[in-house]
Amino acid sequence: MNYHILKKDELDGFVKKLAKKMKVYAPVAKGHDNFAFEEVASAGEIALSYIPTILPPKKYFMPQREKLLDFDLTGGKPADRAVLDAPELAIFAVHTCDLAGIQCLNMVFSEKPRDYNYILRKEKIFIIGLECLKYCDGNAGCAMVGNHNPNGGYDLFFTDLGDRFIIHVNTQKGEELVENMGLAKAAAADMAALDKVREGKKQAFATEPGADPKKLPEVFARAMESKIWHELGARCVSCGNCTNVCPTCYCFDMADTINLDMKTGFRTRTWDSCQFETFAAVAGGENFREERANRQRHRFYRKFKYPLDKFYRSFCTGCGRCTRTCMAKISLKDTLKALVAEHK
Amino acid sequence: MKTENKPVTTAAKPKVAFFDFASCEGCQLQITNLGESLLDILGAIDVVEFREAISEKWDGDYDVVFIEGSIGDPHAEERLKKIRARAKVLIAYGACACTGGVNGMKNSFQIDEIRASVYGKDYKLFASTATKAVHQVVKVDYSINGCPIYAPELVEVLKHALRGLPYTVPDNPVCSECKLNENVCMYERGLACLGPWTKAGCNSWCVNNGNICYGCRGEVSNPAKNANDVIGKYNLKPELIKAKFDMYNKCKEADAK
Image (cartoon, rainbow over all chains, first blue to last red):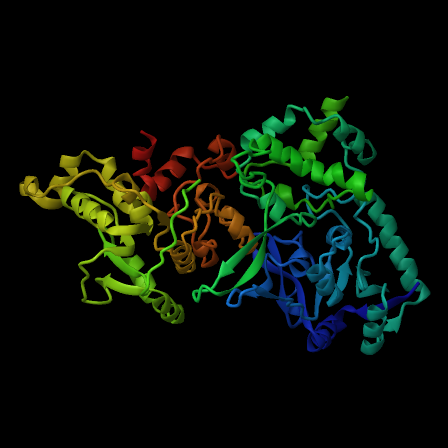
């Protein structure tokens, strides 16, 4: 195991050195207990204690709006050229829920047909995790899905030990960086301190009451006709907030735009949402999920049922963003509890 | 679904005219403010009438007309119908033209009461009718909602019109774009915003610049059935939201009839 130490008063130097190599993005306070990953140049700008950002770091892996190709219709045969904008960058202070989200997206986009824009961009992103020592708020459910402790998916991972961070080095790239920065190896006392922190977390992240994660697959297997979906549907605004902020929602829409010369143009993809009324509408006017209840149900099944069948993994990372952002107070944890109660 | 239009194909560049009715003419100003892309637009079309920018007039038919403003008296209604008769494609642009806009507030009053308040004791000399959006008078082929119009959308709609392709005004709430821009929700700031009920397509322009959504693009076709649940989270009254909506959307009531 490869661990290094960074004293807290050296964090600013660390960030500044890193920012000389590549752009660094970290959580920044936006007021009203809202945070967002933004470019930073020093440690002072970073909110080290933060609840999940408005958008998860997926925005660096699959940007909200992304140009995929340029085309030209001038000749007899249309010509096109693939476009990829993938600068080298670092994301600092990524919580374990969001690391899990990136792992989920990696699985999805690595499936054939592979998404080369995603995969090539991912290779350029240096990920530095930051451990949570307690629940960020009551909406989070990371322990329920086992994401409150680090489980890979990063280059470096920081854990706060009071006056210093202990850094787990997980990749060759990470190793090169800590060597380059001249960070000392962790001593036995540091490792003991880390063990103590993890022991403390067992209490701080006691399992959620009312929704035993092991029972969820069985609950969802029988919840297709539940009345609960209609209750959610009656409240839902169809604004797509819940899916846009979700670290594992990856649906997108594509559109071609022609320039004013009416000959050249470009193709873009934009995040889409299964909560939009048009999402499952097809030619001829049929809509496979016309009702909000069906769309809400679909969202939950895309987190707790379908990915378990396909990837053997929950696509809910427990970050709690969907609950925080919902205009209509639709709570993920309350919905799960209600489904479990109905199942009994 | 909109019916597909024929592409505007002419030997010369398409003849395009801009007309204004009851409005502040701010949407025309948005066009003149387009900057460099205005040069590209002028490369694709031939502007034959545009009161705020040129003094020329045109007495032939129009390939495309842009209509700004709402219709509030019989003369305007006649003039609009004559323009429509000479136009292959009609584009309503701006909130006044598309949804009636702020002029629709007139419809909250008895017509004679509002006439007297505006024109004084001789109000009967001035004809006035309830405010109508352009589509409530003539057929509209394309709409560019918003107060003012969002300039990039104008360019998109123009391109669709020139190619004869249908353009669909986005029908998701403004939140859908606002979230992509990662704004702190106005409700989190303690402000009542109409984003959850208003049609997107403006790229959450107002919220990006620190303002709430005033609902200028009109209500989504299928809003949340029970607004109480939504605004209950923030201890607001449904009447407040309704009153805020009326500022731009009073003319909608004529559509429902």
